[in-house]
Image 1 (cartoon, rainbow, N blue to C red):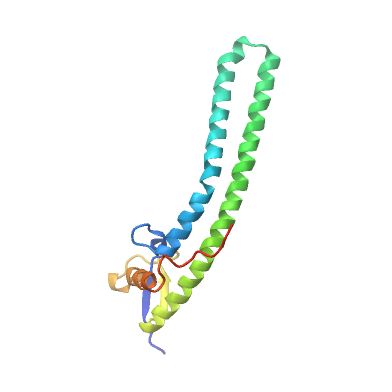
Image 2: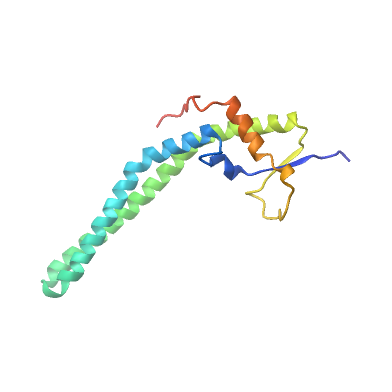
Length: 164
């Protein structure tokens, strides 16, 4: 039976702003920045719905029921628009995130293989994906050394090649 050397890695730490993989964090921030205008638009639309709803609740008892019905219909349409725009934005965000982070994660996977082979590691377990690890020695955790190694070999100035 071959001898196995096992190590643990915390892939969630790769996206840590201070101690994570610089290129991955930069790509994620780039996508966040690209979608900020949509987030602002959705927030503004929600505020308009809230204001229209509050206005209707105040004026509803004293105004013509037809006017109230029209206002309610307008509010319902705004809610549908918000939901549709929110779903569209979420779909576009997920696709863009995959387009930007996917190639970096591929590089990370390859680098992790090289890192493991150079250290004689035969199995790496991702602690974020496995529920069964209750306790492990810190010496098994290669997250920080791997991040440092990856960042030193892949500077953040390397281009994020995928364009919108």
